[in-house]
Amino acid sequence: LVRLRARLARSQNAFGQGLLSLLSADKLDESAWEEIEDTLITADVGVTSAAQIVDSLRTKVKVLGSRTPEEVRGLLREELLAQIDTDQDRAVHTEPHPGAPAVVMVVGVNGTGKTTTTGKLARVLVGDGRSVVLGAADTFRAAAADQLETWGSRVGAPVVRRDEGADPASVAFEAVARGVDDGADTVIVDTAGRLHTKTGLMDELGKVKRVIEKKSRVDDVLLVLDATTGQNGLRQARVFAEVVNISGIVLTKLDGTAKGGIVIQVQRELGVPVKLVGLGEGPDDLAPFDPEAFVDAILE
Ligand code: GDP
Image (cartoon, rainbow, N blue to C red; front, side, top):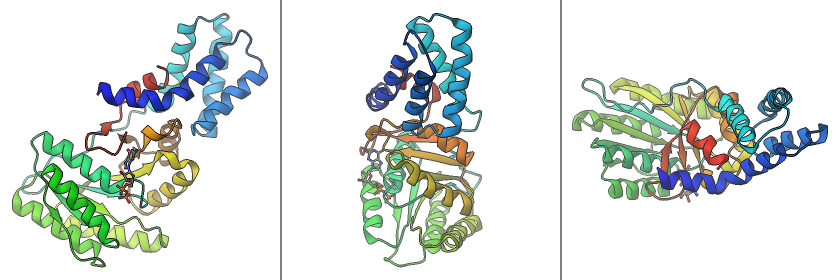
């Protein structure tokens, strides 16, 4: 956790330090507030949240009069937390049901880190003593199944796969059936992220979900979003949220961007909590999203 926090701090720090120094200026005039708002928007906080944060800070700074650096930090911490710390459920639901494994579907555009996240999540669960089955339902690229198999053997989880071009739903079904037969705790299904047509995507993910429900139920649908892709990534995420019922977001590659404000925007836009964050390519670089630790890393 310490290492993850350090990594977060390194990438998010630029944004936080910029805000802190702007807010510490002796005189906060109109152009200073504009600059603060711009800094928030540049960090992908989103226009609505940026305006709310600035409005609220202005009021509080006025009440306070002169400010010590600790007070400035405290105010900013409060405002960022107010935007991030929604009382939504951030747990990933991996507890098995009587006679059937929990099932987690991982969805999102190709390249965002779906397969890597599936592997890392399996690693966490296996590390906790759970038995996990992985389903390679991204059948459009043989490489995706190969990649998942590598993760499976690395972390100790069997991988159910079929030939390239096979029906993703049949792979998902077989993975869950295997989970039931083996008495596994959790099945994680890695899906294809082709944004071909919206109805195509809807049909495909809908079918995957329906066949899973023949054997168990879908406990979590995690949307993987690459934090470095900004507005474009958010647009794609919106399409997924329209076609499938997302229960949580995994924000990947937070190690590679100072635009951590995307956490705020994505939760606001999609109405779904960020549950996990990806902080690197390695097997241990996945962490539960902790709003306080995140804000503290920004303001370190
Ligand atoms: P998929 O197509 O959505 O399954 O994406 P992959 O899992 O293949 O990931 C695409 C690339 O992003 C790979 O090179 C991963 O190693 C890399 N990646 C995934 N998650 C993270 C992360 O949290 N941080 C960094 N730096 N790279 C990541």
